[in-house]
Picture 1 (cartoon, rainbow, N blue to C red):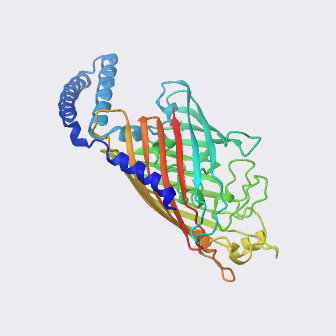
Picture 2: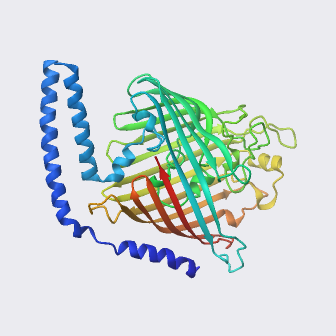
Picture 3: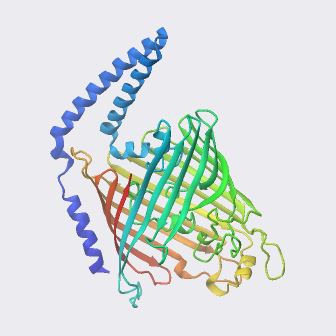
Length: 465
């Protein structure tokens, strides 16, 4: 463990030893002067705009004034709160900056994308000092293309096509991650229909590598909120009064699996196998999912989401009894990104009904049971040590602590596998030479109640455009 931990600690130590913000005081004074100048210009332009509105003069002059105010306001946001806030503010209706490009074009085609490559160096021994048997690997995880088309100010199409693991002839695949039509009825409410990302947690919608900390996604966002999670459906999206919301009806999980969608069903390790991914999804049961976020303060996001639906999808147990498998997921989250700080916390709880019947259908025994109760949470923090330096580079040391238990409760007659109760401590750093490119290095200490955890050192390259 020590030999793997030393490189990660060395990286963090070097980053923390970089010039402190105090060395950029001269630049800060120039920034303050620029902010004061911009504020004076905004006030003058606002006065002109008020005059135009009062006099009802020509629309061309009005639009010109609005563009000038928007441009200056954007520069003020960058200088006062930091690049990370403006980057996050480029997201629209729950999607990342690259996925939101279609919302920012005036009309016609938009193209964006992202990609990430991951190197994993595993410890040769497990937590209990037995040989881990794991081999180091490097994987081009994803190459993603976004294609959108804005028909007019009210109707647009957006999609994500993902190529995973480099080659379909080996472990790779090609999939549609989302594809939907938005129809905006007013400025604060729209109808969305198609293959949808479920609006739960952070990473299921916001998973472009340069906009999250860590070389890989937290286990909570993989096993309980099974990122990337998409299903067919329709619903409402919008923003009003400092709040953003999304609410959909979608095809539910398939907890048993082996249906037309080829889902494998729920397992002791979580809900991930129940995703139907929009492919010939069995739709005997419909689920509802909703999310509400407070976004009234720039850089701050506080909210919650919940999901509920039966996951039996018409399957029966060995006695011929219909399985309902009601599945509930709730999560609460908070994030602050401003002044160089990256702070995030999330807690999620899930319950599954009729687990004894599900175990029977899967022929699970002993400690193989699906969890009746699943819990997970994490806290993470990072700080851009170059925030006060006049440079485009960002260097963000970070730490994340996570706990997850996918068998927090199991039915009578079954036992929990201690390996499903785990903690992961991640320490690392992200370097962004420009906003759109990120290099990350981190070390993960993985522990579980079975003492079979294997630590690992990770290096990733990610980008978006």
